[in-house]
Length: 86
Image (cartoon, rainbow, N blue to C red):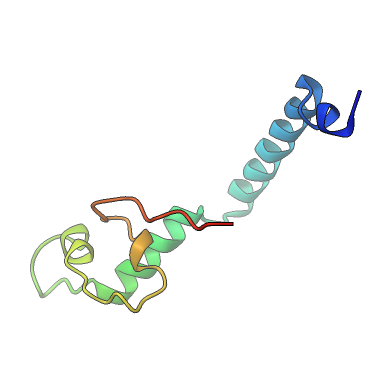
C-alpha cells in the first residue's frame, strides 16, 4: 500500500475525524469561541451602535469598511468570499 493510499484509508480518515472532534470539544469546554463567533463579536464591537437604530445584523450588513481584513467574512454578508488560490 502506498503512502497516499494509507492517508486515505478508512482508518486514517476515522482517526483524523476523531482527533478534530476531540479538539473541538476541548475548545468548547475551555470556552474558546468558534471562528464565526469571534468574527461576529469583533464586528458587533466595531460597528454596532444601539442609538443608531436597526439591529446589529443590519448595521453589520451595511458596513462599508472594505479595508477591514474581516469584511468578507462578516456574519451578515450576502455572498461567500472568494477562495484563495494555492
